[in-house]
Image (tube, rainbow, N blue to C red; front, top):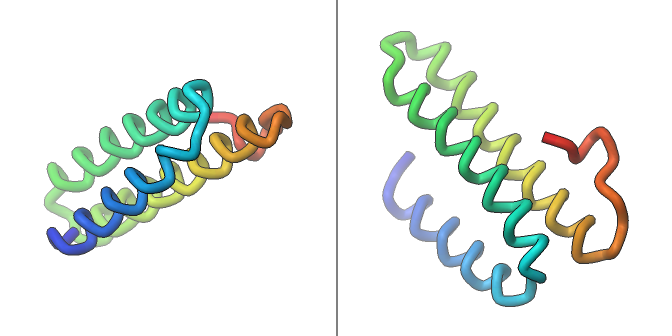
Length: 84
């Protein structure tokens, strides 16, 4: 992942985090931490196809975290699609 993409993602997350409740922030952080673990696995693999797949999984985990945090802020319960 290039540094510009990471910086843009961080800036967007920082801007959005100001609008989230502490509970939603905790939910999103949990998903982001799991995504980081998956990204580390991708970095450690020598297989390019596996690396791409793991990076895609990490991206999906981050997206799920965004959705779950939004559900918490909206007062809704997380459904199975949002559960980690």
